[in-house]
Image (tube, rainbow, N blue to C red; front, side, top):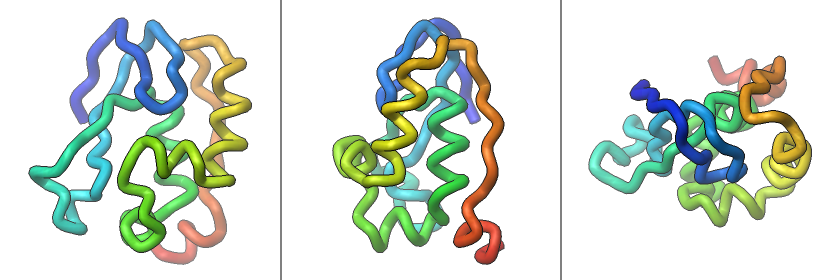
Amino acid sequence: MDSHAEETCELCGRSPLATTVHHLTPREEGGSSLPTARLCRACHRQLHALFTNRDLVTAGLTTLEALRQNPQMAAYLKWIRKQPPGAEPKLRKSRHVRGKR
């Protein structure tokens, strides 16, 4: 994953922090040349802890707006926005995701 310093996370809006490239449609689901978003490490990790790549496509979570409106992500975003930019919260993969791998 490509990292850049001093950017803003396109999902939570926190800055300045390092971001990574997130394929809005996962590459393994045909998203190699489709749009990407710059996400902070915390948001990127949380996203993949909650959903499998297949889930992201089948649930229609392939836009930033769809991700923000998802109840699980909305609750997380409400919390993470209150955290300092350098915060790297611990996370635990959901049972759903753990069972898929």
